[in-house]
Image 1 (tube, one colour):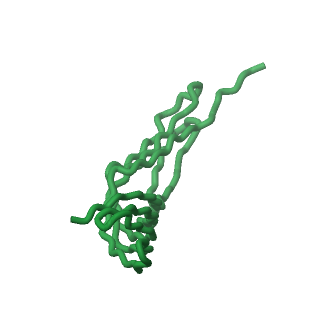
Image 2 (cartoon, rainbow, N blue to C red):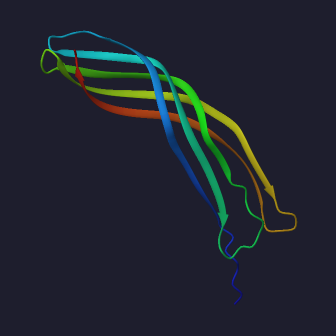
Image 3 (cartoon, rainbow, N blue to C red):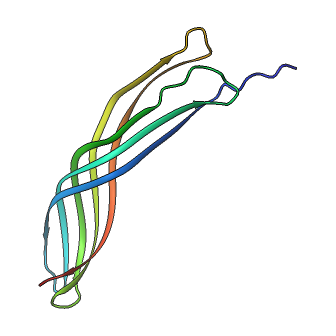
Length: 142
């Protein structure tokens, strides 16, 4: 019995947040020692993306392309809501959730052709970046 070669392909896809920043406005309504609030604004973030393709060890074909987008900066919008509680006259505790959307980027393409070999790699991909943040804060007023 003849054993066939393993012709599977593998992809390691990763995305990493390098940094993020936002400029937001905040509006709320004081209810005694509580302050429920809403936030909205513009946000910036730097993400790194990588796609590493590889073959099973039994396959001997030309290398498949690796794709990297290091430190690409994206601009988007952010909204959020939270609650602040006055503990003392000068000290307050805050909890907040915010959602950021950096939009969709598409049309990234790659192609690797192996003449007379066992495969062709042809693909297109897109990036859809969204971020959810949960924050807790302690404020002191001078």
